[in-house]
Image 1 (tube, rainbow, N blue to C red):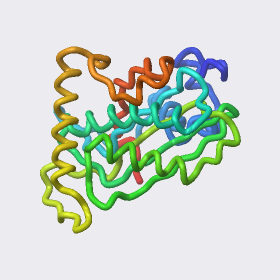
Image 2 (cartoon, rainbow, N blue to C red):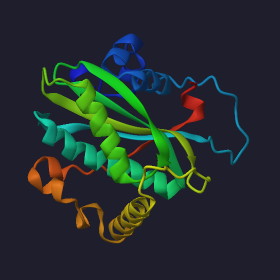
Image 3 (cartoon, helix red, strand yellow):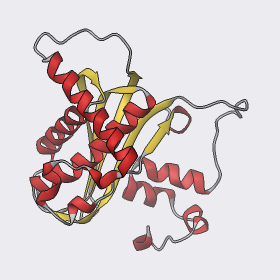
Length: 221
């Protein structure tokens, strides 16, 4: 936003909505509406909480990403944070979406529907990375990445077992994720890291602890 000359809420409110949309996608429309105090939804009763529609996280990377390993490191950090928030709120997702923006500000989004709902970090990042590999040809370095978990269901919903899946492995991965959640809750985000994060000192210092929770009231379809 600073590059667009936007440094205050007032400047954001007075900006061209189409310009924001071209740079930030759908969230640009949301930011513009928030800055102007516009919301067409009816007033809710006290204590009402809008149902969560999706949970996502995105970041402008500490440096431009130049290869698949760079992307893998950042997507791990994003997937960890999204999966942790899914588990905290008792959800699994049936869809994984990625957003990619290169250093010339060209951006796109892609999504994939999963065979089974999940809140397992490894499954989310694997889906995200495959989406990236299938849709990006490295014409330019990458400036920012995002991962969003959508089509949420409660994590205790009955699920048909996958004939070709390994249920025992899934249970071990989920147990491992919850152990990592507890360690980070007690000792901080950087108290435990995956080995891949140590392959680049700059990228590994990204703290992907912030999240965007999207309730139904802001995104109708």
